[in-house]
Image 1 (cartoon, rainbow, N blue to C red):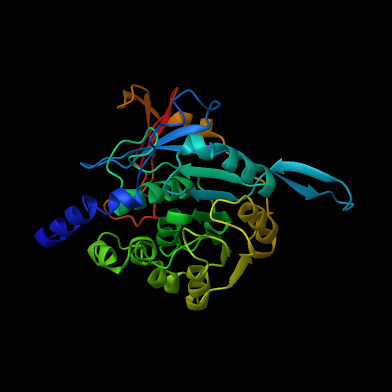
Image 2: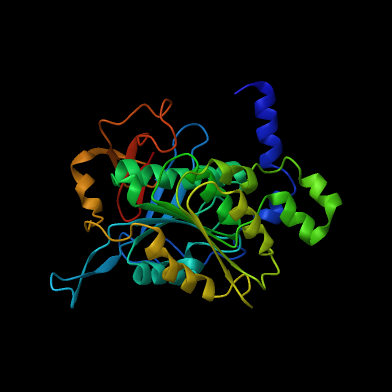
Amino acid sequence: MSFFGEITEAYKSHHIINDFLFPGSSKTAYGWDTFKQDELICLSTGGADNLIIPCLLLRGRSARPSKDGEEKRHQHASTLLIYCHANSEDLGSIYPCAQWLCQMMGVHVLVPEYPGYGLCTGNPCEDTVNRAVLAACTFAKDALRWDLDHILIYGRSIGTGPALNAARLGRVGGLVLVSPYTNIRDIIETHVGSVIALIAAGASDWDNRSMIRNVAVPILLIHGTADDIIPCNHSEELHELCQAPKRLVLLERVGHQDMDLLYALVHASPDMFPLLDLPRAIDLSTVAPLISGSKGPTAVPVFNLSNLDDPAQASPWGSNAGEMFIGGRNVFVL
């Protein structure tokens, strides 16, 4: 990166507007032993600016008709949903919601934590949040070996920015945007005026208005008409700009946090995305033969992935996993 590029990134990462966009968790809603075994893993991005990213990993089961078409048999889900949460949540507070989607949609769910939230250390800003989400994408593709056609990316509120960023970089099965925004500046102008919005210029490149033009996968947009945080006209504008297969669901008298938004997602998803296909289990023990015997930063065994691309040459959706850590807390180095 050039000198001026480094200055720009430093400006973005320490911009005062980040305190507005990423308040973090005032109180962490979970600990290392809060969840069931293998529901909490960690991803490490490696390198000099390494991030250790806690993630929820929930296994789903879906109902498929039997041969006679009458009874339904429950098998492992075939689709993996990568969940980008909002800015006032962490893995502990969104666990019930993630578990509900896992059960109601019949999908596996992977939720990366944002730096500065929960147990994830670091400075929350656009760059680090993007890196956390892209690390989850890399883990899904290269560690779990998941078919891109059966990966859905879900973003809610502030999470629609990193979700759109990830979806435009790889042709996944689909993208869900719940209560999305056109860009960061528009949100700030809605709440505190145009003067502060001018100050916010340059703090974030999450310009969903621009990014959605470059997304080629099916997109489902869901918004409540009574949303007083992000007005529903943001979704309407994004829907107009989208060139991919799309659907806009507007819910009357529904606000920013209402559960009806999730009911709409469960109802509309089967017609938009390939949720039912060959069942596939998530089994972390399949990487056990890769153990190297050394110790990682969390004092657990280190697992090395073989036959993967050089991280310096790989794209965010490419094969750039380097090492894995698995133990009481599972940590994967990407």
